Image 1: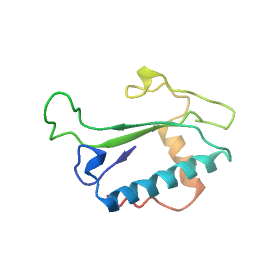
Image 2: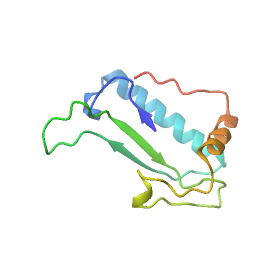
Image 3: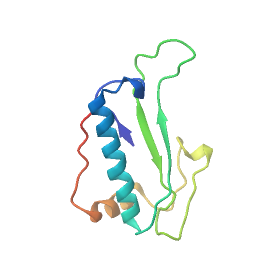
Image 4: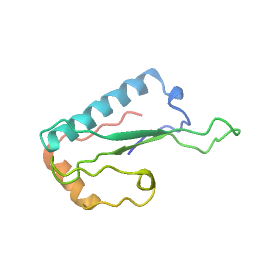
Length: 114
């Protein structure tokens, strides 16, 4: 998940520098996914912005989810379906185990500028 540090409701509220930072973060993240199993890594992603058709939503905070279908290896795919995308995902690997695999890729940490 990517969450902006500055409170914004819509991606259109990002400053130019924040747009550049988001692009850099997306490149770093997708490259790490590709390097995890040494293959081009498919994923689904969704940006969540404030609703636009029923008034103001000042408490809404922009964020982005990633749903990578490769959880254990390059040959075992798990495509999320609708009920899993923001509910309780049915995964065969724990978030802790997945995070540990990603940490082993490199000592480079994401530097989020926004």
